[in-house]
Length: 153
Image (tube, rainbow, N blue to C red; front, side, top):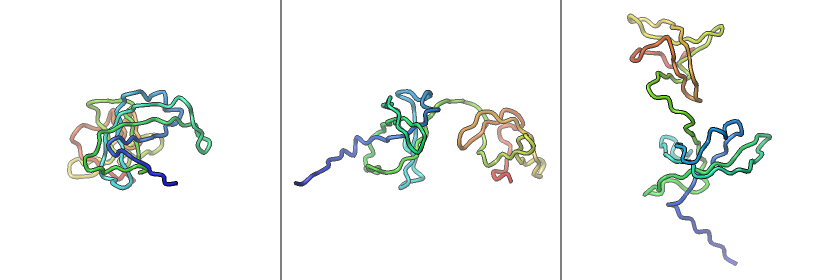
């Protein structure tokens, strides 16, 4: 017998595994974005369209499958079985100052950045706020427009 798989490239979905500690913050219609290994510089937007109520155990970690839908790609850039790296927007904080994590260093329980002041690089203590995997909110110690070194070491 011959078997044929028919795939509609205009109706692909992304399947994401969400840890049980985070699943309570996921909801239908929630905005998301993702990248794929094939095109690491391209970011695609999506929305949560389904949350599987049954958990799956993977390497001792409880995960839930979340399905994301995205607009069809006219050039069919995305293909089935591509590895996707998903970011789900669980909270939005407008008008806050943030820096990449690599710009902040910790010393004896305090957080510092290196700032350009009067043509010299100086350490400035800051008060960090909420964090993502890539960025940290700066609640005190910096003003918008200041020049900060990105590689704090």
